[in-house]
Image 1 (cartoon, rainbow, N blue to C red):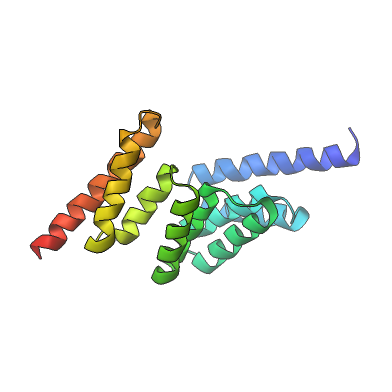
Image 2: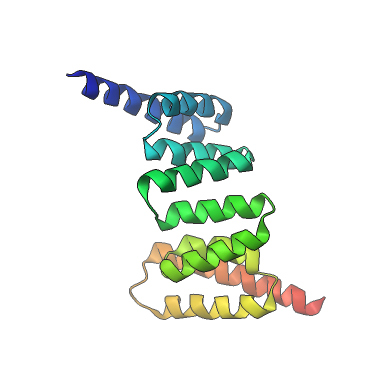
Length: 171
């Protein structure tokens, strides 16, 4: 095994340990392991994605946002990390920015179910956008190509919006 392969194997081992720690709820130790990996391999995008998740779960939101943005700079765009970035912005109180972000993600990835789930959490009390969002979800559900897994996300998001709009109408 050459030096590059040896370094890659060590990083993979540390990466697996960090994921195991995070899954077990040991966020602080997982963060420490991931920070060591990031220092050793700062151009490894998946480290920034996992570190962003750790920072998101521990409510270190500015750090989570920076980690997700770093991932995007290294790996390019994808609906999963864009959704996580929008969630972090919303949780950080940057609601307007999060709404614009989710609008953009929905335009570019209209069949990614998790974005509807997160977006519904932001838009659900807004009758002007909640109703049209439910219509988009209904259209996706009518498409027989949508997988059973994705349908669960979409049903939950639509139900959440409708329930909250009903509460909003009663107020």
